[in-house]
Length: 129
Image (cartoon, rainbow, N blue to C red; front, side):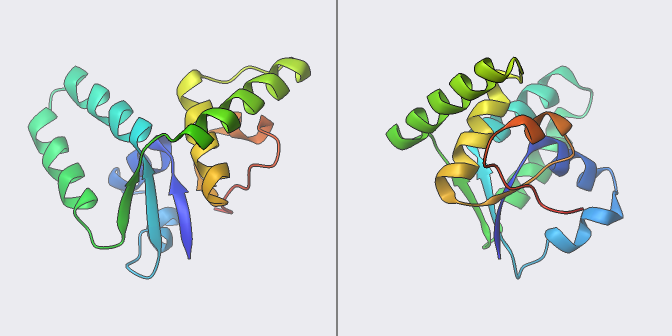
């Protein structure tokens, strides 16, 4: 199985949330949007364990079933549609979350997240936790 990973799920897993353990299996392909990597590193920079967190992240990213996904031209088109649909519905989510959702939609992947804001994104499939 392949899924896209959100920052909230990565962080919760690393804090010991056992409900997420099944997702972080070698049997699953884990797609990590480059935006998630940026959010994590921003959090590390603001914290007290930057080196430790960076080493943990790098080990995770080096796993054979983990793939970092960048933004493509198609991602930008999907992002623009997410923006428009949310605006029409009067719903707002963070810019980074729209990029993460756009990548998940582009790849036709479910998104593993603990963030309820993603429920407002049309056609986005969320992993059941």
